[in-house]
Amino acid sequence: MDKLEQQLDSFQPEARRSALEQLWAQVQAGQIEIPPAGTHLNIHCHTFFSFNAYGYSPTHFAWKALRQGLALAGIVDFDVLDGLEELAAAGRLLGLRTTVGLETRVYVPQFAQWEITSPGEPGITYHMGIGFPTARLDGAAREFQQNLKQTAQQRNRELMGRVNPYLSPVELDYERYILSLVPAGNATERHMCLAYARRAQQEFPDADRLGRFWAAKLGDGFRPEDLPDKPGLLNLIRARTMKRGTVGYVQPDSGSFPWMDAFNEFVLQAGGIPCLTWLDGTSEGERHIEELLDIAEASGVAAINIVPDRNYGPKGGDEKYRNLCQIVRIAQRRDLIPVAGTEMNSFGQRFVDDFDSEELRPMQPFFLQGAYIFYGHTVLQRRSRLGYTSDWARSHFPERRERNRYFEQVGRLIPPGREQRLEAFDADSLPGEILDAAAGWQGGSDGE
Image (cartoon, rainbow, N blue to C red; front, side):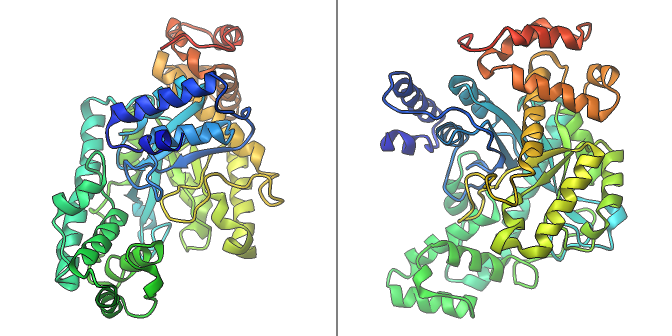
């Protein structure tokens, strides 16, 4: 099983699929025990199509989610939807409910004077779309998404051009050292840090010389025990060469990223749900969260992303936990759909939030409801174009609270192996007809 699980992260799609099919055959033969699905979830996990600290592919993430008994599993990669079809296929095979999002950074002109979720960058915030039904986009949506990826890669190349002289003789060639670390050409700053660490080890194979090199370049905070490429070194490379105040950093302006309303329009065109992201409530922009939400909702935002794990306990402290409780109350009052997940794009992050903890237990039903809504939207939009943001849904459920309740029911009723049956419905169908039919589809698979 260990060998097959390692194969789940191959850069070859056929190898990943073959490994999953073999593992699933062992499950069906009773050789691998799978726990029943519980109530825990992670619908915001990055994969190796942007950066996963443990190298997980969408297939591996689905398999691990199944083995840990998650009720729902979702991925969110930076600037691409490359993992969408793979995760959906894995979910159908394993009987696992899945959903897919895309994350980027956007500009909010109304908040140009305040930091929001991107430290030191006023007006810039991380932002998402979630519940995309397909990665096969066309027209303006396809052009917008391609531009997101191309712009991000160009920023990386320019960043490398500034960092290379500082770290000389440890210099990188983008294609040779960075793109080789990713399966589909979507490298991130974290890949660049790993590439620099490995290139330095090639340049200085002697451990003492390697340590002296990094100590000179990175200064305070460097620890020899982090050599050659442990998380502490990678994080320090990023902090000392790529972040604000370093040789690689260039302050973004209003043209560096798409405006939030333009990104939301793209998400809606692509069949997803625009989603505001929330960090911890401590920035000046997030202290004006109600005003930010008013602006976001006016251009289509109906969801909010929250990462619970970093906002309570020793990591968060009392202030951040109070802020976490407050944003959950605000989301509930506004009928915003919550996204919860641990990201896993940094070493040490959990695979799933501790929803059994005293702090998160009261919030768990709210997060679970949101995950079912996204899954219900995803399959209805993918199969019949009757998703959450469709004219059909808006006409039958003009109030968001009613719409949330309906799509949660859809998400709970429709098994992953039976979603193709939704193709029998169209804009003339009634909401109750779909629920009545789905109630009879439980168990099994149609063999898609």
